Structure formats: structure tokens, C-alpha cells
Figure (cartoon, one colour):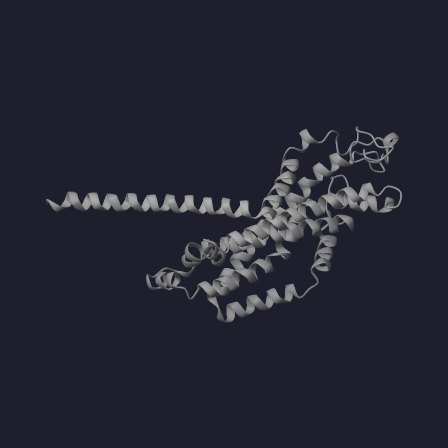
Length: 314
């Protein structure tokens, strides 16, 4: 009876120490990320570029000086402000229908980021489920799933997407679903490779010996270790989807013409490249700016989420 208080106090002390260790671990992790980002100047630049586009998309009604659909034929093809005939009323000029290009760029960021974010979210979710089942089950299940994935990946991606978009029609939801479904095999292959590696690890074998079923092993023990590689891959795939959406818009297969998007702006400006290059040049630079920022941010995430690199830099 006299030993019980001592045991209780020691247990409480161990619990408090474990909580302090967890807090210290989270603190150290956040400090490491901050130091790594500060040393990687390209990562800071990429983060600022990406946040700039996100800020413009969220606060588009307050940033854009004009309605993106407002037409004024008397002010059509006004050049940017830095040219001799430019005006501060339209900083980046106007298109052939007199619509303010800057306003359309700001609202177009919403379409690109929406397609990229939700498309990658669907692709990553499907790829995570399919790749986890394929890698963990192995055998005939893995063979069938990987044969289907390899068949899809063997198709020319852009032609495959254009074919499906031509059948389904022009719609923002259709574009998101097309990119989400057709891009999922890439996430599935990455997930399968990681699951095959982790399936032989000690903590998975311990869970199996404890009687855990395979769904619990996959989602409780394997999935948390897939977050780093999938986040890095998602960043690069978001950048690619912005390009693909612009390509579909250029071909007239993305969102309807009434919706301001960078792809639609490129399609409208290709007829005026010689006389009014700013109509197509502005959305082209916006696409390049956003993709460059996301690629720089993706490079930083790949480095900071790599456990081997983290151990080598401590």
C-alpha cells in the first residue's frame, strides 16, 4: 500500500515527460522547417509567388478595378500603361472587346487554382486508395491493378484528356473530374512503391502480429508515412494541371467562354499576336508566374519532407 503513491507519481511523471517530448518534437520540427526555408531562398520566393496568386484569387472582387465581363468597344485594344498610348485606367490594357485584362487575370486565377486544387485532391485520394490496396495485397490483385494503370499511362495524356473533354462538354466540374480521374494513376504508382517498401518494416509486422486487419494497417500505420511524398507530388501536379487547363481553354474545351480564365484569354488573344500581343501575353505570363512559384515551392517541400536529407542536415 505504501508503494502505490510512488508508482502513481512516477507514472504521472513519465506521462508529463512524454508530453514534453512530444511538444519539444513539434517545436523542433517547426524550427527546422523555418530554418530550412530561410536558407532556401528559392523556397521563399516560390512561397511568396504562390501566396500572391492565392491572395489575388480570394480577394478578386476587391482587387479587380472592373467587372471582368464588362465590355466597352470604344476602349478596345488599349495598350498597357507603359506604352505610348496606354492609360492608367487599364494597367495591362484591354482586349478586342474592351474588357480590362488585369481584372480578367485576377478572376482567372480562381479558375486555375480551383481546377488545380480539387483536381489534385481527387487524384491523390483515388491514387492513395488504389495504390495502397495494390501494394499491400500484392499477387494477382497487384498485377491486375498495375496492368490497368500502365495501360492508362501508356496513352498520350493530353490527347486522352482532350478526347474526354470533347465528349463531356465545357464545364468547370467536368474539367476538375477529368483531371482528377486521369491523373490518379500517377499517385497510385507512387503510393504503391512506398507501400511495397513499408510493408516489410517492423511496425507493420508488429501490427500484423497483434492481429490488426489490413484496412487498419493501411490507414493507421502506412498512410501517415505517405503524406510527405504525396504532398510533394501534389505540388508539382497542381502546376501541371494549370498548364493543362490553359491548354484545354486554348482549344475551347475548358470552361464556357463567359467564364474568365487564362486559357480562354489565350484563345481570344491568339488572333491579335501581331498587333496587340499584350492580350495573349498577359495570361501567358500569369501561367508562367504561377507555375514557377509552385515548382519552386515543390522543390523546397521535396527537400524538407525527405527524412534522409533531414538527418543529413541536422
